Image (cartoon, rainbow, N blue to C red):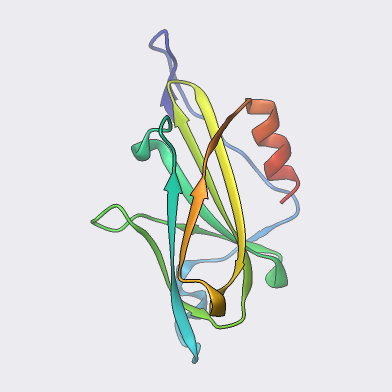
Length: 130
């Protein structure tokens, strides 16, 4: 949801027909795990209108990562060796921002995802191709 430059309130939903949805407790009982922190980087995107997702290609699934009380996006109990893509989507006054970064849990703990301004059509296409 966001406000347009002329003051209109809008909600935008993006869907994926190729990815399933898993919850943050998916790896709760997994052993040999680590944490992952995702830091969306943008000068223009409003941090209160930024969402972070982790795409787990091996499971063909996506997981929403919510900010903690310090505004940090931390995902805990992710099994070592898990390949994933961190996706950040932002908005500011009706303008869209998007970034993606790939990695493997055993080699990373902090991932910085740079958000770049994109059109709504480009964002929809990027999400469709995750």
